Length: 338
Image 1 (tube, one colour):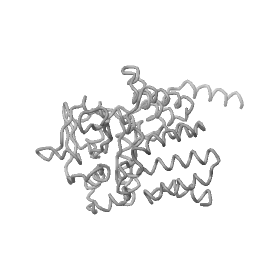
Image 2 (cartoon, one colour; image 1 turned 90 degrees about the horizontal axis):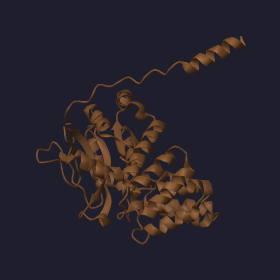
Image 3 (cartoon, helix red, strand yellow; image 1 turned 90 degrees about the vertical axis):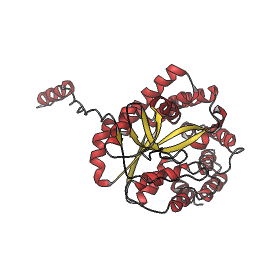
Image 4 (tube, rainbow, N blue to C red; image 1 turned 180 degrees about the vertical axis):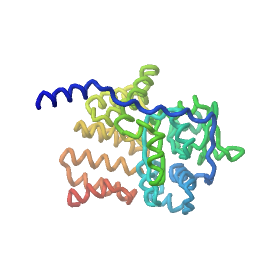
């Protein structure tokens, strides 16, 4: 009997896995219809983009309610994708965020009937020192461009999308590890799984992102590519390696607003017990903005790691003061008995 089991196991090892079913190429061009245009207020591209994405699903809620939920603190200028997903869940939708997007994958998703929220670098005066984040809704493409409903630039002259050439879009997209957020109705999940293929798996997506980011760094050697490598390694639970890449990115030189929008360095240093490095990042941000709730949350994690529970609780409360819809901060206060 043991010999039979052993033979079965050996056969299982040599039988190849079933190949992933090849997908048909996406149409040469495609545009989604049914989005409502909304122009943003100052520093409100995230809730405005979310409103436009939600409008596609026939949800005609008040845009002001979205702003109040996502940005209750007037000066806050940063909203994470998970916060957008949490709001969408209050509207009966589901959502996912991924990194390592490609032109063809985005084409497939759009052609399957899903508008996509993407995060791009934006330069108000075409000055690298003026680098910041900007969210827009991808809703179409053709042979040379993606098309967007953009909170700042509009829906295009024909209201069929503001066009950005693939090369220019990818240059801006890379700075945010080519992230994307898709909302969908629960009954459409099987269709989205088919469209995303292996990228539905977070582990596969992280590996693909790592390969993409490493190729970017090998080609350019720039700080944001190094940061993207570190971010992907963090998702793969390779925190020691991730810290080396984050350190490299900081040594090369990151945009001064970097940690208004991206928080992977805090997570990497926390995973490695490097609490003083976390606080160094905190005090790089605070002289320029005291409004970003995540910075206080990571300060609290650092102080908690250092054993200073009183300062940790105070910073968790500071995070909640800037956004009451911050379950991680509330959970930490409850855990510490604050």
